[in-house]
Length: 413
Picture 1 (cartoon, rainbow, N blue to C red):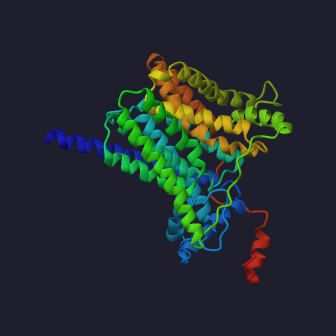
Picture 2 (picture 1 turned 90 degrees about the vertical axis):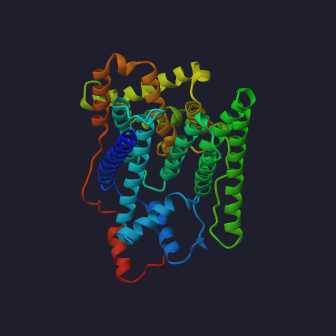
Picture 3 (picture 1 turned 90 degrees about the horizontal axis):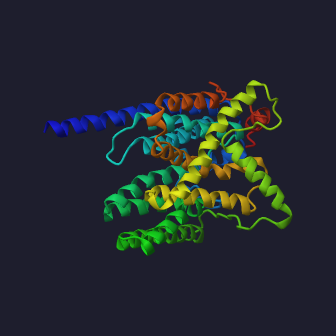
């Protein structure tokens, strides 16, 4: 009885600790969002959420973006409107909380071992490296919707994938399938950057692994989730609901190969907030960028080490590695890279690489051999990545025009 009580108390302490950290991250991330102006792309999802609350459940008459966000970002904005009212502040609050939600999932995944014990070293390292995400947001104004909730759902599926890999159960598989179904309906981009990597690894495990039946069932359930997600979207459209025009996937044009190569390599630097080119050699900015570059160097080391040890890696790490390669290859060879701001398409690589980096650091005994150096380096990296913050939103370029239109009741344009 005492053992059960102690276990309950330990779990409760972990939950309270992570909730407290999530609240702190939410306040921090919201204050970062308030420093930046949003655009019409970010305002449109607020209008979609309001339309659903007004009774237009399937967004009849709406032609949405490249993905619907119907079951991913939009529900968060609906909750935001219900709590904070229908105003632009919802854009800032929900964006900040979404990033905090993503960060806390990364931290939990990295800091918990297979037995559910918290590693303080992994917690600190993952927390510090998650600052690369908010730095990327600050540099490029990546307000929601930008697949953040979708990626958070993908991270949630990692919990279940790890559990199923160790102890298979049909209940766990059903929950995994439902999470992926919700993710795929709201964001078809995740089919390519998360669904396909899972399918590739599960196919390999089925063909060459020992527990063929387990992987065959998992493989089948993922395929069913993808198929059902497409059916649901088609049913919504055929019954007068929203239309998702999507984007036709194309390889980069021959004449733009050089531009894609440039954007690919500069995108890797931008991903880790390294902007050293054109800077004076002896300057504070150069020092800060050199600190940021540590993350990029460790990322490259982690990739090389993971490739060399691929067969020994746990299933989830193998999936993450395949995801990173697909994401990088897509950005290099497809026509999505238009300018430096399209680095947002590499966001999955940054998110999942944090998990890979922490795994690499632990398995190479970096922390065990030099704990103080690792912790101090991580903290210095995080401090160098802290962006500008604000307690009030900035004036938008169209604020005066918006006020004029509202005063004249010209609100339907």
